[in-house]
Length: 151
Image 1 (cartoon, helix red, strand yellow):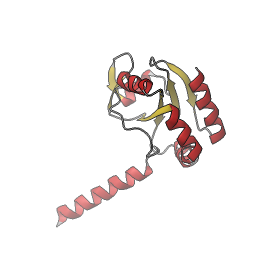
Image 2 (cartoon, helix red, strand yellow):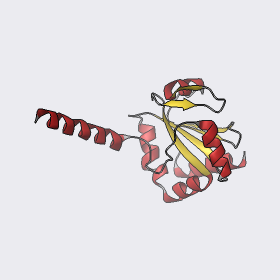
Image 3 (cartoon, rainbow, N blue to C red):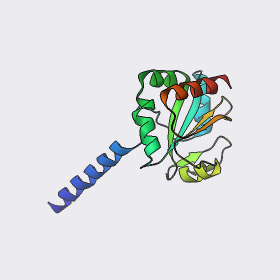
Image 4 (cartoon, helix red, strand yellow):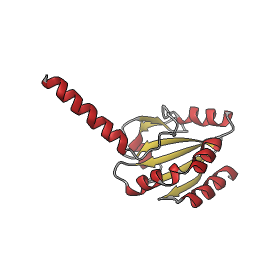
């Protein structure tokens, strides 16, 4: 019986953690193999949008609850980009566009991610064309999407 109670509490803890994540559920699932992700996005006429976040980040939470909750932003983002989230302290293995493999947190350091949220928009060759740091209200986010499409 103690094992079942412990298991139930652990599951409840995981569920609570999942609910506090600062990542919208409409973001793409990715194996974080960015050379492949860039290729697949380009094949579909899209670009990759990387969203670096961390638990407990009030700006990330605000971005999720306002900007990423706006229906027009969701539609525009998904129409032109493949949004992928990375935790700046994460342990998942990621392959950067140049083929190097490292943990999410090492990649964040390598890409000089100094604050969250940070958005990187990659072109069809995997080059970063737009970098945006900090919370973006909906109107500024739409402008950033436009800039990322043009570059």
